[in-house]
Image (tube, rainbow, N blue to C red; front, side):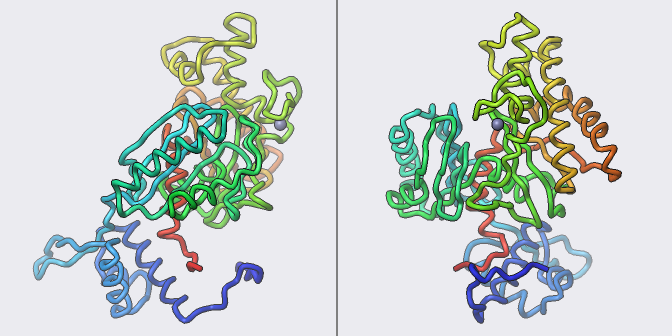
Length: 396
Ligand SMILES: [Zn+2]
């Protein structure tokens, strides 16, 4: 059982139980739609009258609507569905190369998007984000909040970007600043944490009943998001999940963001794969191709590209086996462009995990590729707002 956090505890209010019951009913509709009031009552052991009251409230709030089910002889049953259509949140994926600002509906479908190059000048990038966000808000009256995914160390409690290594940005109170100009609720998190949240709420069906998993986000760097007991584990000031800097060897093909050639990131990031490709192709560590092109080359049969991805997968597997030894998650999900290369890398990845899991004596966690595709971080940004609609947290 979870110990009550007295630092954050609100005095229990009379509407607390009602709020929790509301979230349970809403989640039943979300996961099992179309579903009848009677089925919800049966599965939750809530009284029929309680379920009916809650459903009326959810209908009035525009979150669910009724449809007529198939008749099995008598009067056709009335079933409930989630009202997904309509723009409800804005997601901002601030990446090291490009930034995407998009609107999404209640189930995380992207409706409209604008993409631009991320400028190393923080003010230029911020003003560009503000202008996109304000454009969307002006045309979409139902937007409830803005979620932002950032490539660095983020304190989600204060909404501050503590350090974005790629741009050397420090102590940027982005949630406060964007909230001030837009008047919206703004939630911020690190890209890997946000991506893990998206997997939890919007990802593969088989993850729905998993309470503990790790998302490994492979990009220019390498980050991990830890889902522990159905929520993101943040650690002190959002610093958890920095496994990209655990030491796994010496003499990596590139240096990590902090300059070390011993970190997991230096062996298993997109940059590491590109450096391996360049080494095999022309004996240097520099290449003009992008990681996306490297994956395309591997699919077109280029041996050097395939080898670079397979060797990178081996080191990804090494790191994953270390994480599973320490955290024993139910699953590990691989996210980022590399998930597209799954058919090329799966064998090397699984065999590295299996070889290095022997001394643990336990079966290793199932590892699979993310299905959120190239929008993983954007979905993460949206889910910072969307998850709040379904999560079992009593609002302050
Ligand atoms: Zn490092």
